[in-house]
Amino acid sequence: MFTFRAIARRGLAACCGLMAAAALAQPASAQEGARRVREVINLDTGLAQPAPAQEGAPQRPEPVAQTQAPAAEAADRAFVITPGDGRLGTFKTVQGQVTLAQGDTRRAAVVGGALLPQERLSTGADGIAAVTLRDGTVLTLGPDSSLDLAEFDFNSTTQEGSMWVKLARGSLRVITGLIAKLQPEKVKVTTPTAVIGVRGTDFIVETRP
Image (cartoon, rainbow, N blue to C red; front, side):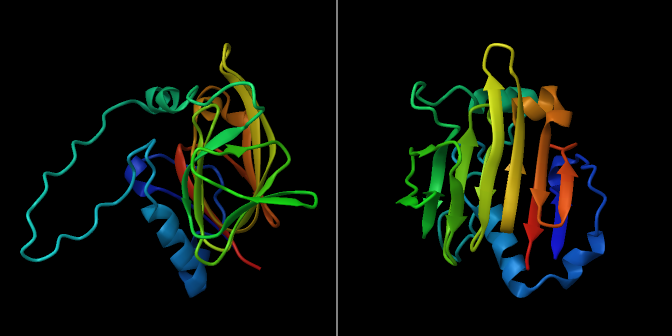
């Protein structure tokens, strides 16, 4: 089963147009995965949801909403990693079991670590991972999920490039960066049953066997 949803509070549309009613029939595991993806703390974007206030606890002031344009937000997230190691992105959040595999080689993902070319990113039942790519795109992978960054090219001088994310299973939240801002036709997300052309800046994709 495949589900695509744009994040409503961003007020932006996506061009997928596929199976909106399928979200109503998704299994509990998919709903839980999507919920955890939405709630994961992302230090780059400040998109974490505040925890409910406890009775009798001192009240903290509400955070001030950010007013940056999407392009400015993406620019702030971009160009923050150490050059020269060939990485495509840097892990900002790692919770539970998160592994990277290339052929027979496997390693654990760590905060500040690199996502390298041709690596498959996978999470266990308790896993969550958020990685910021070189153009400022943020990929947040939910529990029991797997993806390949099949294509990623970004020129930091011209801010041009291309990106292809292959979601093999599970749930994925995408906050797009400079590539999608300047060349949205060069960004796509695929699942085993669908191809998604990106027309928004914040959306969730779910796919289950």
